[in-house]
Amino acid sequence: MKKAGIIGSGIAGLASAIHLARKGYKVQVFEQAPTYGGKLGVAHIGNYRFDLGPSLFTMPHFVEELLDAELLKKFQVIRLKTLCHYFYDHLEKPFIASGEIDKFIQEAAEYFEENPENIQKFLKKAKELYNITAPVFLENSLHKLSTYTSKTGRKGIANLWRIDMFNSMNSALEKQFNNPQLIQLFNRYATYNGSNPYKAPATLNVIPHLEFFYGAYLPIKGMRNIADIVYEQALKLGVEFYFDTTINGAEINSKHRITKLVSNKNEVFDLDMCIANIDVKLLYRQVLKAPIPKRIENAENSSSALIFYWGIKQKFPELDVHNILFSNNYKEEFEAIFDRKSLQNDPTVYINITSKQIPTDAPSYGENWFVMINAAHDTGQYTPEYLEEVRDRIIKKINGVLKVDVASLIEVEDILQPVTIASRTGSDKGSLYGSSSNNRMSAFFRQSNYSSQFKNLYFCGGSVHPGGGIPLCLLGAGILNKIIPNADS
Ligand SMILES: Cc1cc2nc3c(=O)[nH]c(=O)nc-3n(C[C@H](O)[C@H](O)[C@H](O)COP(=O)(O)OP(=O)(O)OC[C@H]3O[C@@H](n4cnc5c(N)ncnc54)[C@H](O)[C@@H]3O)c2cc1C
Image 1 (tube, helix red, strand yellow):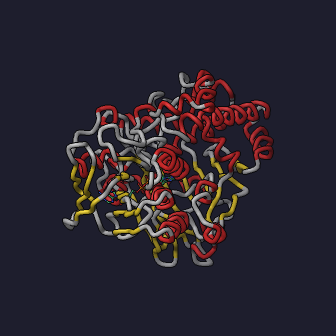
Image 2: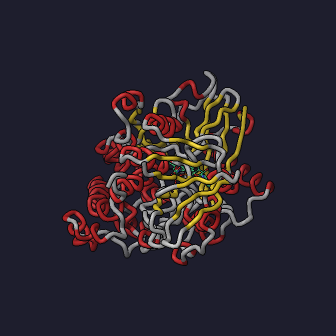
Image 3: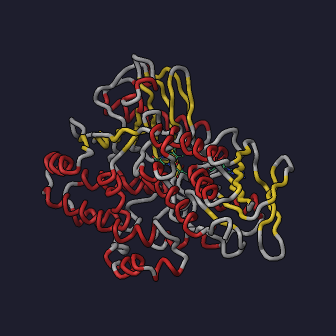
């Protein structure tokens, strides 16, 4: 039986394990941590449960497609009626973004005093962008000729002039809308893949389509349940997991094939095929011990994040599952993150509260707050004093908007910062999504899903094509499913 070895059990590694097991491979997954899931971690602190990483879930059908009938029944998700509560310092009431597209358009037009037709046109354009880009940029390998010669690929290529690659997201939005707060709301979607809306191509204005058309979801057992269910499916298919097993070497034969993986415990694993689900830079440094290709080395990292997990001993009816307390100077915020690699003066604060939908995530009197700001990747700046300063600025922002003394309400606390994101999951400098999309060529510079240097090496996960975030990681695993032959062929 042909053996496939997968390094890393992030969501893309787990999904790839399922695809390969179904293709007839004996699949072994090697994971440095004591458990599966990578960034989709979970923690219980006191009486509160926290998802440690992703909080926003779109396109659940990519998870559902991996599951057999029994597990599909077990995996239950709620479609959120409200996408987000947006707070602006100078406006008394938050904007409540409905998950129903027509309601959103009508309410946004009233709140932001915009022409509803402009909003409708923008969302229509986002859909069009998705239809053009998905077959070329998301569902297939960008680096295989067949992507461009297939019928859908040819159609996509013919329409590429319509994808607005030469404008930035922000400049396209400024042409579309008059209200700066509505522009800020749509600019925020750049952060869904760790990019800067003032630099990223307007093609990324496709992202709102995913939320408005496919919806925002929460699994009824929390985000960690996505990893749980996919892991359970992999186990059912006979995939073997080796936890606490860091792969730190490989043997490569004269035909440029990886024949063995070597662990930190000096275990040696034979294989016919290797799938890397770890950050591509880490793979070159730690496993292959080979130079990182220049286009990957030089690509700008995506942003990272600082997250405070706070058990809050009070309920806040004005908050929902997703809440944004916007910065007054959004441009300065992105300059701080990407140019100065420093702390923004007035950070946009995101508060995610799963206990709004999953009451058991917090005691009856409280709420589990996941409080996050976007942050620069690690360049050595995250000293204890720096983290204290971040905490103070976040608290100041929340106090100002919600008119509370939030520090006095924190019952339990933990923090995740770029340095720990890097050490726990192997992400280069703690970046959440591999390289950023701040350049219109970024998609082409990202590592393809297969290696041209090592014949039996394939890639999946947030740092490679088509990029980070759960849906794209699952699409990446889907591309492997298309390009890797069955074990018996
Ligand atoms: C704070 C935060 C918030 C986020 N928010 C969202 C969100 O709201 N929505 C969304 O869709 N996405 C979000 N993301 C991004 C999303 O979590 C990732 O894109 C996705 O989970 C990455 O999955 P992956 O398959 O690349 O693997 P990863 O999750 O990166 O896992 C890689 C695995 O490889 C293991 N590993 C590393 N090196 C080795 C080695 N040498 N040997 C063995 N194992 C190794 C690691 O321990 C890890 O388990 C967020 C991420 C973070 C951190």
